[in-house]
Image (cartoon, rainbow, N blue to C red; front, top):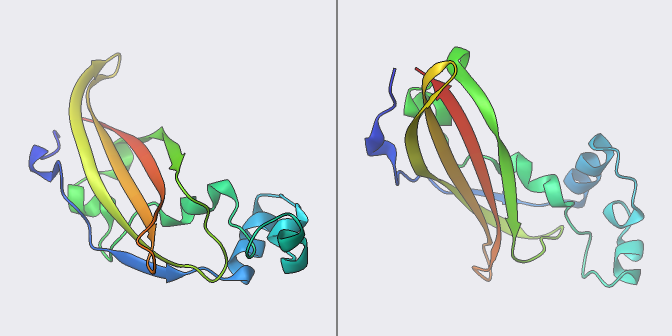
Length: 148
C-alpha cells in the first residue's frame, strides 16, 4: 500500500525532557562506554565540560516527538517496514540539567522500485533544541523503507 503523500511536511507535536546525570550514566553504561566524563561531574569539568555531557548517540532516545505513534499515524504496517539507517548532525553539546524540546517532521516520502517491487522511502527528521536558549542541538535523520 502506497503511503499518503499528504504527510510530507507533517510535524508531530513538540516533546520536552529534562536531561539528568543518571540518564546519561545509564545510557553510557548500556552502550558500554566507560569514559569517566559520563559518570563523574569532577572528571567532566576537568576535561572542560560545564556538566556531564551526553554521549553522541544519546539522541537516539528522542527519535520521534509527540504522543502519537509515528508509524500508526503514517499508516505503516510493521511487517512491511525496513530500517534504512540513521544519521546525526550535531550543532551544540547537550549536558545534564538541560531542558530539551524536540520535534519530528516528515521530510519526504518517495516511491522507488527495487528487486522486491515498489516501496516508499520515508525520511523523518527530529530536531532537538535547548529550551532555555532555543539553541539547535541536533538533527536525527531517520530513513525507513516501506514495501507496498
